[in-house]
Length: 306
Image 1: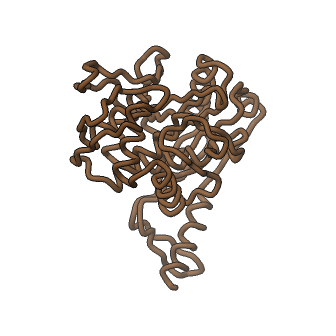
Image 2: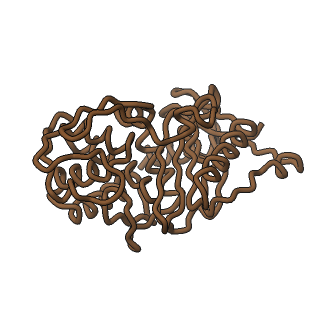
Image 3: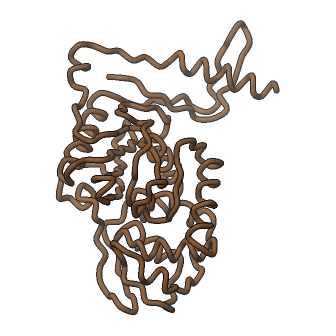
């Protein structure tokens, strides 16, 4: 109990350091977005720097694969050899052209899932980890609730193909991405621009679909990204970026065109990097509250407006 009290007091003291200074000029610079929903989350502190309809339940399309990937990395053995089923071979949409009976490592499937958005890779991962797509969805939802504390997400498949019950929010997607980015394996794959794919039916170099990450929309500091689209969801986009002062997760949902999803994301990146910075209080820093000393148990991040 004493540890909990000390932690709460430390948080209260840390929060007293956070100052957000607003002005007419900074308010006018808040981005005007086309996307129906969006959020910017500072990765280290977890503070929301911008949001628009961030708690509205929406269709994520292939941003679902961020959750599938981190679940597979955390719960699976990356060296496991997965045998591809007919169900995986024949899934609709974007594929890495797996063949029925083909044997592929789990690590390779995750690369195909994130970099080329392979729906077949997603089904193969789901069946390997849980036996079926349906059971995988149940397992994934339980994992996300426990590990990420999500309350507004319900996934029914590993890839994001449309189902009216397959919903999440911009806020939940940002939290999933924040959680995933703490994993070194995920960060490496999420930030990869290309990957050599040697398959039974397809030998190629996979190239990321994320146009900021691969430089078609130049922006310094982008560290990863995932695209998504089905008709019902519009264009969806997840982007991570960092500079010396901030590490950002940017989610945009339901943009009418692909170009607008990137334009909105670039606006949010510019806005956040121009207006905010992250500071931290070192582990072991001592605070005095009512003449009693407390020690910060770990490095604590907080954000302030420039």
